[in-house]
Image (tube, rainbow, N blue to C red; front, side, top):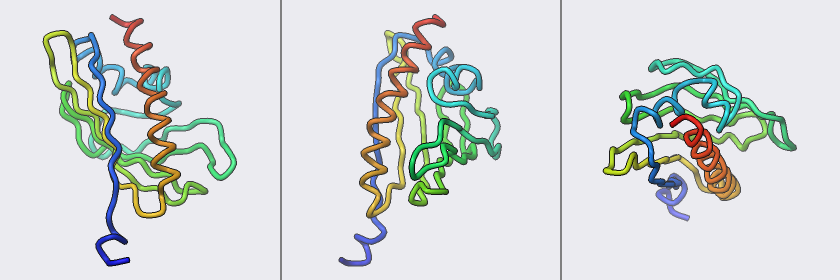
Length: 146
């Protein structure tokens, strides 16, 4: 294995078109109670530098806590945060970025989770499954808030 292969990372991208304007989708991404409805319990605040946690039920090999920090915030356009799963989570340190683009019928949402390292295939596959489920929940939450 060459040095480049050892440091190569993978990025998961999931895109959805939503029949809601960007400001409605943005609210669901940045308001703690709405985030909890589709993602996890949290103490999120939309402020660059804010450290927060997502929490869910512990599982074998994971305490159920995701340590995060808001990295980028452009209202109704872009939200990015660190997504670190330490204890029992194979030391997963990634970046989650949501990009909202207005469309004629609502919003194009792009979710990107970057930084999966070599040997983290299980984490990558778990994230692919989890984000599909989470974004389905986001669509349900948005359907009730239009």
